[in-house]
Length: 387
Ligand code: PMP
Image (cartoon, rainbow, N blue to C red; front, side):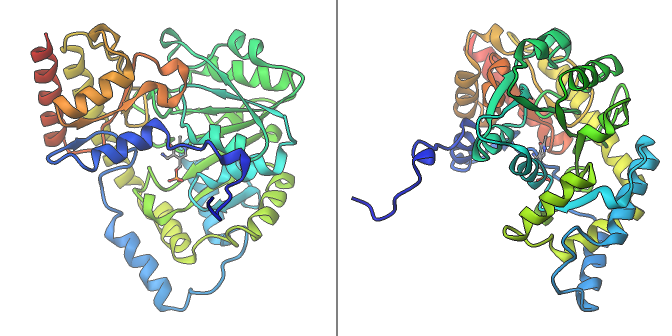
């Protein structure tokens, strides 16, 4: 008998199918890895310099719990400049990665058994965060013909008297979908009608290739019921710095801040200084990288559509493609494992993001055009060989 007695609720905790692919992929020699949801670009050297300068000047003490005020002002200015959103810097809380923001929100709001509508396919961390905080996940399925976002009817069917929060992510990981104004208004209508709070994960806001980014909190009746998740990981290639933020009602942020005291006690000071510099100086570089990602997703979608059994809609945002591979006769799980073996290319099975992802795979276009070209060649060859 082990002396380590894991809590009953985690006794059957297993790595997700995404983690299993990551692990298997790391052992494949010569692999081209299209499974990682992070930009391949390093953080710009001047951002690193700004953080290093702050360190040398003694910015090495505990941070203010809510985050430095100058950074919160930069975040508010960034959203005003790019998306026309008015935010009071007092309504912003810095978090450890964007990832900590929904976790703290669930922790602050969920009573045991409260239900959370999660539009899927989605970033699967939400599922675990809801469960870890005593909530019950109510996945809301979607269909490809609706750009992989649930419709008003889909939400209406999933709402119960226990529903408290609705989670949606646009631009979307894993589908590359971007909410239209009509879809965004439908979500607002569902939220207002059923008195739901909304977590709107907008971490990919910088990457839009068609349509427009609509901050859900900017819609009528939404500001007081929305927490927006934002970050630096994707837009400013700062995944390793572990910094992000929540924008939302002050009364919620206050509780989230108090909860964070016993967990993280604020966010790394140097990451905050680097982040403030990044928001103030990098708009042109963000734009250039967005154009590069657009080139990549368009190229890969074109290549994928020429492959037997594969059909790939254009990505509207983020840097993912979510092709339908059901025409190959394989399930998404089978396909991902087969491709790892037969083509030495790693992708993620669609069902890792929820049941609606069945028959699809997620391809992260986070490698150079040259490597993406090689990956597409390998995939095409492997499929042709299979016949
Ligand atoms: N939301 C979504 C939709 C994501 O894809 C990710 C990262 N893959 C995050 C949040 C978390 O990002 P961060 O690195 O800022 O914690």
